[in-house]
Amino acid sequence: MHQHSRQRGMTLVELMIAAAIGLVVVLAATATFLGSRQLFAANAQAQAVEDSLRFAASVVRVAVRQAGYSDYAPDHAGADGTVAIGSSANLTAAPDDLFALDIVGATNARVGLTGESHGSHNSRGVNGSDSLRVRFFGRSRAGGGEAEPDGTMIDCMGIAQAGPADGEPSLADRAWSFFFVAEAADREPELYCKYRSDGQGTFKSEPLARGIEVFKVAYAYDGNGDGVPERWIDAAQLESQAGSTAAINGEWRKVVGLRIGMVARSGPGIGEARTQGELLYPLGTDFPGVSFMPPADGRLRRTATFTVMLRNVLKETGP
Image (cartoon, rainbow, N blue to C red; front, side, top):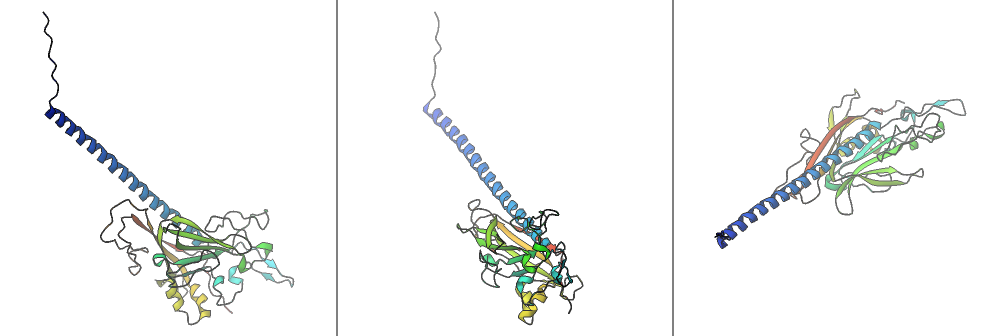
């Protein structure tokens, strides 16, 4: 006679314990997943901030190094047989004409998205940001016609600029690159590039890097002309040294280098809001007077600071 083994089910207590253990495992797995997802999002945001800073710094560096370039401007023989050297050092302009300058800027400035203005001092720039304008001659391809650029000289949008037309350069032939911070439609700050979009003098602005909320510039001032700067000052301080409007250009021509600093921020929602923000120094701790206290919004922020010495310093010419 066969004996059948009796099957025993789980008691209610055992079932509840098993369910509780399973729930703990599920909750732990969910927490791990959410933590990993948040960490991945934070890393992606951090990478985006670093990318914005690197790209913005690269574009600004290239533009500043081109400031004052004019070596390629061709010589021109006039009708009377005289020869004009195609160099901005030999092209005349009114002493108070700011458009004649290769480098000029404004402190704490808002800049219009159109037009040739670089703004004015203390016009409430976004987070106290400065503006910077750079001008330079383009360069045409040898044998390709005067209007065909060779690609070596570009504006802030990366558009290649041709050399002076008709072999007779003028200051008006030079290209333009403006840098400033403005807010997009969604109120996010961006570093903008303003450039001349056509031969008729139409200016347009395009965002270069999203999340750039501070753009500051200090200028290496060489007052005695020995090529070594004595101090670093901002645009407003530089122009305040001029005794008259006509003398402002002379002060700008004593600039031999630029110190540029930027602060970039991530998108919202990657961290908890803090009770107090961290004081940042866009131009580095060597410039303690230039600081930025961001709001306690939980966004990730990074700074980038670099120095560019001018290659084509334009000195005052003698009588």
